[in-house]
Length: 522
Ligand code: 3PG
Image (cartoon, rainbow, N blue to C red; front, side, top):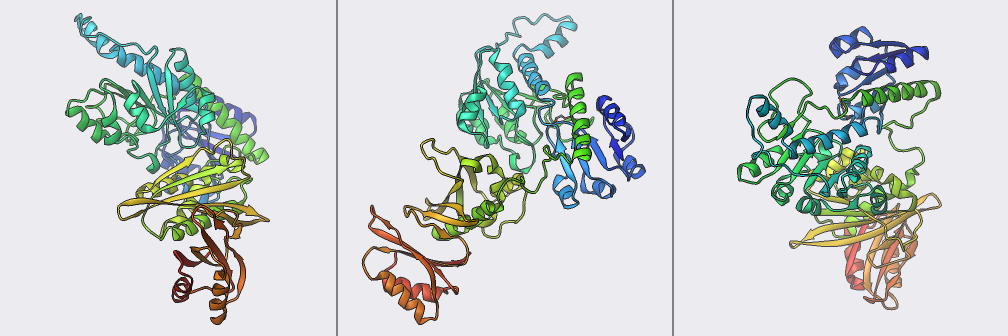
């Protein structure tokens, strides 16, 4: 079996795979297009930042597995790879220390003017007064993204006695605290931190994440470090802020292309490096060793534990994903189908560890016309494009719920954001809604024809509903109508054997004086 390594990766990967009986071709000088043409029979491909678009994948019909020897895999068209049954992996954590150390190096270099001081001293100048520096020790550092790199940076900063604030969409508050970072929202980080370092993945979900608004909140003299991906910082906004007199120190090692060119950040960056984050002998070796062992375990044992483009994790019950989409649709209708401005979710119990996989399903359920079947990052990006803020809340410790999801939609009505909230779970393999707003203990099926009516609780209402439906030849399969003692209202969720059309909904709503009425087929 042939493995192609078209990159400057430590030779230990090729050595290990050759010893395991694979035919390995490593060549970091020939262009990738030429290499794949010559080795179209390769079943495995190991790359660093080299681009692997659909066109390359198409030229490798025998390809089964692509390994990104590194962290970010946005250089590989992993979604297209999935459609061809190709597994894509990264080597998580292999270069985390190298990147964390690079951040510390850049911060210290910028604080102490290491680069200009070296240049000018060599040139015979003596600029001691001009280069009055600052110290990293005991500074407040904000870290965006507490993955392997962010966490390693927390560790390294502990040696400098820094106060570390962490922002991470997917990490629980407790987990962040355990790592040593105080969880904080972006606004708090940008308005209080002396140094902000970015460690989120690139791509549409994080494009211009650091925008004019956040840049505007930064303290005068604060530092922004981007060793993650080009595009996460809106450099146009940074340029404008600096031109307007805001003093921000910007360190970057990311560029539109990893290639020689006049880099667009040159005029706004105090320190800029050619994507050197992972470029240490140690990290290169570690990534090579990991890539080789992952590739061998993949082909020999079918080990897919590091696959990043799996459809969904095998141990996630598909009924929970369906539930998320159905809850989204129900919530959208319950709130009156108004423009959605914000979605907040709480994932309970085992669902917490799978929360990113729910984003595409929530998107396709709640947002009419949204794309279906997106990968989690693309779904997040799509929500942003729809102008919807998406937030996964931390479950409250005192709520010992089973596997379940609370979904709140904030829809705009007359310039105000009105919240509609639903909760769901899976019972006997079927998704059910257990709460709509303040109406608890519904446990109504999330499939089939559903009529929902809110009314002032009094005797005889259910009978009226049943009577009008029966006059139209519609049978009630199931009905629940819990009371909300606070408002004195009941909410009837009626499952019917046939769809209830708008005219009939209107008729029933008038007959019972409904405060809210809608029907939908889930
Ligand atoms: C990564 O995502 O691992 C880093 O960006 C390193 O990229 P490199 O392997 O091209 O140095």
